Every structure is written in structure tokens, then in C-alpha cells.
Image 1 (tube, helix red, strand yellow):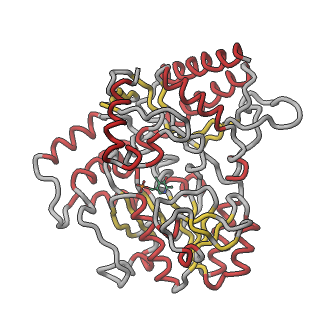
Image 2: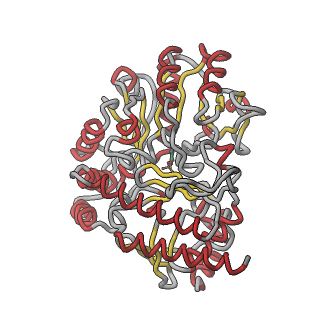
Image 3: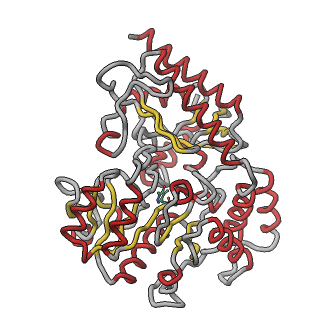
Length: 445
Ligand SMILES: *Cc1c(COP(=O)(O)O)cnc(C)c1O
């Protein structure tokens, strides 16, 4: 098992830093070497050694229709014959922009980019230009791509001036990013009491996915909306992960809150590189060439990428898709909790729509769970509580699931995704495999 993958990883490490083109792929958080993938079809991926897996990473979210959806493939083949890029406008870009504006009432105008990172970087520049203010508020545990202003961690205590989270991020820039605690409005209020007049925007994952899945508590997003409006700051929803994932109109449709700016990525490219940022017309009209705020991209609006996006969105627009995703994800969630409880493994499951994380949290105090849909673990509501997870246990779980043919995200602090290609049988098989893993743990104890 994994023979060719291990050989490829050796080769890769000679010429690529750490052997991968994005750090989480290296499996550092779970141990072992990464698996090199040869192909994918529907809910399955196949590694270079020929082993098959049920895939719950789905390219980290974009593949909501599964691998090689026939309609997406057909549309791509059609475009391929007409060229791959012109660096000039095409009709398809207009169509994707129209689809995005229709889906998100808060987005009146939108600019396409090539990645989520580009979108959040551009949204911050635009917010700073529009408000003529320098500071940004973000939340501990939220990830918004690798732009300098966003690779910032909290100083000592929340609502403090940021420190660089990576060498190479200038401390002078990090100081302009305030880090607050997710689901903690008082920490945001404190930030605004101290720096309100200087804060350009609050950027948030409306449902956090990058510390594992952590939903907003009732009132949190409403509170952010009010605090930013009162202070004359902008609210930026980073929906790179949640856009077209939690509902066709993203988290903002699900929770009924409008942001001023929204960043998108992942699903809108249908598995090819696309990002977008959009929002209120008066703000977006400040973007070049209409306005003075510079943003550009040689391959932005690329015909292939845009085509995969359009085709994906048109399929998602059909009735019933999100209901099916929701009910299958719920079956998976309930099944995993049930077998964990039966095996006396302490977990807590967080799920919104088809996005979920099984946290191996320590046992909550008090009596065992009263409801069958509760695990025995402590609740996870922010980065502080997520951090309590037993990452060693998750690592074992991940490796054993992988060997038995289930490919999970290789970190405790990532969300898993379901696609429309995941069948009820896939879900049952996954639960069955996890049950075998937990049974093995019981015998060892
Ligand atoms: C994935 C992600 C990004 C970064 O997108 P890339 O395309 O990887 O640059 C930004 N924000 C959120 C919420 C994401 O999940």
C-alpha cells in the first residue's frame, strides 16, 4: 500500500518545498506521507497505487457535484476547442457574474479573480480605500487565504493588536489587524471601543470552516452587522467556502444577513481556479478601471474556469439539491455520533448543511448525552474550544480510515464536505468503516 505515493513524495521533496503545493496536503497534522491521487470519479478518488477511497475532501469544497460530473466535463470539452485564454472579455464571464449577483442579493457587482486569497486581499484593499481607514478586525481560527494582513494571530488576549503569523509578514502591517474571538461579541465591542474610528472592516467566515466547522451562535452575525453599521465600518463575509455550499445564496441566505462585501471561490470555479469579490454597487464602483482601487489578473475570468463554474451553479440552482445534501449529511452526522457513543469514544460533531467536523474533544462533564444526536465531547464554539481536541486521536482515526478506503481531511481543524455524488450507500459504508475503527480501539483499551 502507498508504494508509488511514497516514491513520488520522495521525488517531490527534491523540487517542491515540503513536496506539496499547499501545506495541508503534506499530512503533517496526522502523520504519514501524503497519498498521490491519479483520478477521481463521482464520490471516489483513486491513488497512484490503484487504491480507491470515498472522498470527503472534494478538493477542499469546490467539487460539490463530485468528481468528473458529466455535464461539467461536457461543457469543458466544448470550450477547450475554442481556446483557453484571450486576456480580453468574453460572454461567459458576464454570465457567471450575473449568476452570482442573482444568487446573492447583497452582491450588486462582482469582480472575478483566480483564487480565494486574491479575493480577500482585494476586498480588504477596497474596504480600506472606501472607508479611508487602515485597520481590519478578524477572528481567531478563521482563515481567509494567505494575504499579509490576514496571516495575523492574536496578541496576548483577544481584541488586541495582531502579531505576524508567519515570518515575512511585517509587524507594522500585522498591527493593523485586530483579532477577536469567534462567537464573542463583547470582544468585538472592545475592539471598536478602542479603535472604532480606524476600523475599515470586519472580515469573518459566517460559518467557520477553517478551525473545523464552527457555526455562528444565534445573534453573533446580527451583532457584527449592527456594530459595523454603527461604526461606519464594512462587514465582509468570506464565503469562499460557504458560498453555494450552505445554500445557493450561501451563509447569508441561510442566516438572513446581508454583508457589504462578499468573497467567493471554490464552488464558483467548479474545480478550476476562480475567485470573486463583490458587494454594494457604491463600494464596487471604486474598483479600477471605474474607480481608483487597483486590482487585476492576467487569467481572471478564464474561459475554462468560468465554464466549470457556470455549469456547476446551473445544476445547483435546480430544486431539491440542498435538501438532499442536508439530509445525507445529517445521516452521516447521526451515524458517526451513534457509533462513537456506542464505542465510548468522546466526540462532538459540528455540522451546517453539507459541511461538518467530528471533533475528538475531551469528555464533557456531567451525565452522558441525553439526545441521540449529541456526542459525549465538549462543545466547540470557537478556536479556544476547538484547540482542546485530541489531535493524536484524530490522527489515528484519519490514518485508519484512510487504510480502509475513506479519505478525510488530513487535519482535525478542517471541515469535511459531501457532494451530490455521495450516495446513501457511500454514507452507510463510511459509518460502517468508522465503526470497525472504533471497535479496534475498544479492543486495544
Ligand atoms: C479556501 C479559503 C480561502 C482561500 O482560498 P484559496 O483559493 O485557497 O486562495 C479563503 N477563505 C476561506 C474561508 C477559505 O475557505
